[in-house]
Length: 343
Image 1 (tube, rainbow, N blue to C red):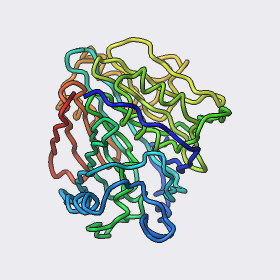
Image 2: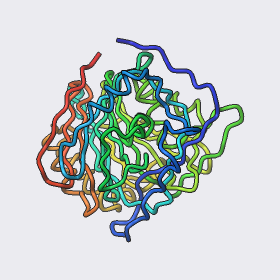
Image 3: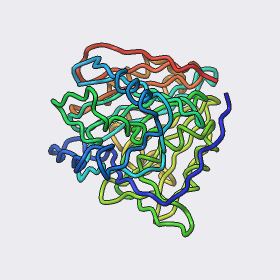
């Protein structure tokens, strides 16, 4: 069902996090934990839930593999503009994303998330004034570290605010990767949101690539002291776009083609030959050229496996028309499948 857009009411900050450059690197520092959990005295939580909805949300949490990977269904509403105290302070690794739209009847969005050994969460949300979605969250940025038992942890009520990739019920998907050349200059009069938080606003309110770009255009992004980012968008029509920040200004690339890829090098205005000099980009491009940009989920996961790195945490595909999500993690425990009802 078509849903109304959420209104942004204030200029609020979330420190950025993302994925970046080198094929090998020393381990980044662990994320800074919040001084106190959301919901404690004086610490805001994004939840607009009543007590019963919060309890049902936390009761839905279950561990499904030893990454550790968890699943949770968020019951009720949340404020997608509320600030959190999550920060990174990390030197991130690399991510690989692509859209395969050679067959417009079954476009597909795929990504590797390459990062530190943190716990992850598959999150279902269905806000009353936004689109239902499935997204993946690195819950270390909520202060839930490796080895911690998150059962009953109210910090998870802020999980909707930190999607690192995801797809909504209209078939709009979005993911991020670091671009260390990006700079975002504030536009007067626009509210400010964090560079990860913008994914939540897109998933909740945008049905198409054009609408997603319009969401980006309504906000100033704050990259904070962390990795600056660029973004890959795609929708159920097979349309796709890259959003980058060049010399402080937002730019988009929406030119056609059967596929589009993104790693950790700028792509807008960069010749294809130069882009293919990036190892992961070049491997993805070659594979998608061979298939004419038409791949199913198993083939997409094979491409992701070919460019995985020692620090790849998860590989995921989103069927932009089918609503099917396929996920594998670094544990090698097998593929998990989810189904998002499409509207």
